[in-house]
Structure formats: C-alpha cells, structure tokens
Amino acid sequence: MRKLEGMTALVTGGGRGIGRAVALAFAAEGARVVVAARTQPEIEAVAKECGEGALAVPLDVTDELACSAAVRRVESELGGLDILVNNAGVASSSKFTDLDAATWRHTLAVDLDGPFFLTRAAVPGMLERGSGAVIAIASVASRVGGSYVAHYTAAKHGLLGMMRALSQEYARKGLTFNCVCPGYVDTPMTQHTIANIMERTGRSREEAMRPLLTPQGRLVTPGEVAEVCVLLASREGRGINGQAINVDGGQVQA
Image (cartoon, rainbow, N blue to C red; front, top):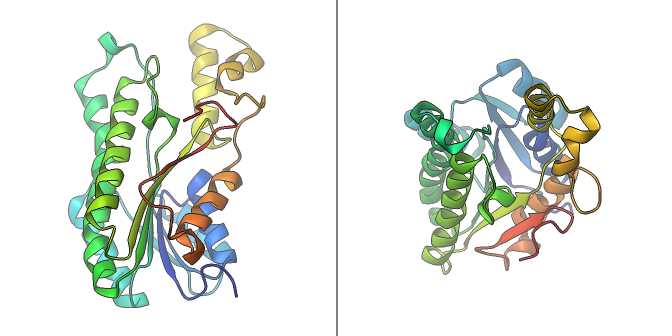
C-alpha cells in the first residue's frame, strides 16, 4: 500500500519548484492532489502530471475569501481534506533601511497571512474527521536571522510560531502541524536570487551562488524537500508534531 493511499492533499504554490515536486511525490504515493497557485497553465500542467483525479485550483493566497472557498471546494468535490501544504511564498532582499512598507506587507501577506487563512479554513473539517496533517514550507530563515531579509525572516519566524502553537492546541485531536525548513533550493525563485546578486554586485554566476550553497557544496533539490513532506503527511509520520525539520545539508544544526 502506498503511503498516502486514499488521502486528499492541497498544495499551494504547486505550479513550480518545491510545490510541483511535493504534488508529484504525493500523487506517486497514492494521494488525490489539488494543485493551487495563481498561474492557471502551470497548475493545469502539474495536475495533468499527477494523473487521474488531480485538480487544478487557481488561488491567490492573500485573498481570505478565496482561501476559504478553495478548501470548501476540495471538501465538497473530493470528500474531505487530509493534508494541507502551505508552500506558496515570495522572497526578496533589501537593506533594512531601504525596505518599503509595501514590500513588507506583501511578504507577510503571502508568506504568513496565506497559511493562516488556509489553515484556519482546513482545521474544522480535519477536526470532524479526527485526523489531518498541515505542513508549512518555512525555510531555514524561520530558525535563524540573515542580512537583507528582515521581512522574509519575520514572516517565516511567524509561520513557525503559528505551527508550533497549533501543534499544542490540537495535539489530542489527531492533527499534526510541522514545518519543513529548506536551505536554498534549486528552483526558479533561487535562480532569480542568483541573477539579482549578479546584477547588483557584478559577480560571476559561480561567485553569486557560493553563499547560497549548503555545507555539502550544492543547492537542495525540490525532491529532497518533497520526500520529507511525504513522511510528515503519512500515517507513519503522525508522531512528528510541532517540529521544524531542516533540509539544508547541515547549514543550521538545531
């Protein structure tokens, strides 16, 4: 029996990068996958890759009503929601004194408000069924501070705090809440970061990548993050609750 057989999972930011890898890994383990993101062609392509029963749902996670509607749709059409992966996110860098309010608010809206809206919508149904797994892709920035990313770090610290609080609030209700905390992952978002460093500093691609590499001398792969999510979503992973699991090649040892 596959690890997620008979379960239904909603993956936000599912059109590319980590979200796509998670959606495909879940589908391979037997889950019915709902792929959500703003870009319809991307999520339709990933849903097709996931196979029969997969659903593509356009979603802007900063829209509270849209988040509630997405969860209701999954529950109505697929009979319930067993796994929620809050993966949608944005990242940018800026000197703190140059950080404008609009960037601050947008980062928190996507990286923290969106998971709040979706988790709040998903928990009642999970409580009714007596089981459920909520997984947040939180980044090592939820564990440690870093230069030029005060807004991103604040959002990710808040996300980890929320998940830890919920893990205690619902510990006896059959629900689990965990964070996966990758280092820099080989995704389009990281490639954009590398290009931005090259443009700002005049460094070569190799020089720009160097501070982003793990102690193993490489970027994390989306598949490595996805496999941790499979464990956390599975029945075998239900003893893991309130945790922040680093996937960073040993960068943050805590």
